[in-house]
Amino acid sequence: MPFKERQQISICAAAAIMIVAFVLLRYLPLQKRAKAVTEERTAQMLAIMKASSAGRKLSPLKEELLQLQRSVKNYERLVPSERALGEFLQEIAGLMNEHNLREQLVQPGEEIEAGELNCIPVNMQCKGKLAQLFEFYKSLQKLDRLARIEEVKLINDSNFNGEVSMQTRAVIYYRKDTGQG
Image (tube, rainbow, N blue to C red; front, side):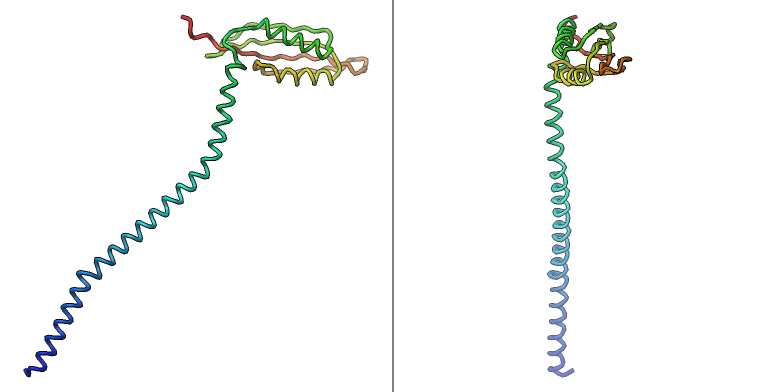
C-alpha cells in the first residue's frame, strides 16, 4: 500500500476516532445534561403554577378565616358563661314596651343541657300592629345575647282592625362554667 493511501487512511481513521470521541465524550453527555435541565425547568414551572394556584385560593381562605375569627370573638359575648335569665326576660319585656305591644307574656321553659351549652326555651306572647311586631323582631336580633327563634305564630284579630297576636318560641343559650368542679 502506497504511503499516500496509508496517510489518507490514517487521517480518515484519526478523524473517525475524533468524531466518535467527540460524540461519546462530549455530545452525548451534553445532550443528557440538556434533557435533564429541560426536565428540571418543566418541574419548576409546574411547581410555580401549583404555588400560584394555591396563592389564588389563599385569599378567599384568609377572608373566611377573618369572618370565623370575628364570629368566634362575638361568641363569648353572645353566649355568656352565666345563666342571666332574669336580665334577658327584662330585656324582652323592655323591647315589648318600647314597641307598644300589649298583653305581654314572657315565660321561660325548662332548661335543657346540650353538651357544653345549656338551652333555655322562652315562650313570648303579645298583641300589636304588624309593623310593631316587625320592629320588635329587628330589636331582638340586635340583642347582645344569642336567641334562636324556633317558631312564630301570627294570628290576625277576628275584628280585622289590624291587630295581630304573636306567639313565639325562642331558645337562649349559656355556656357551662367548666372552671368549677
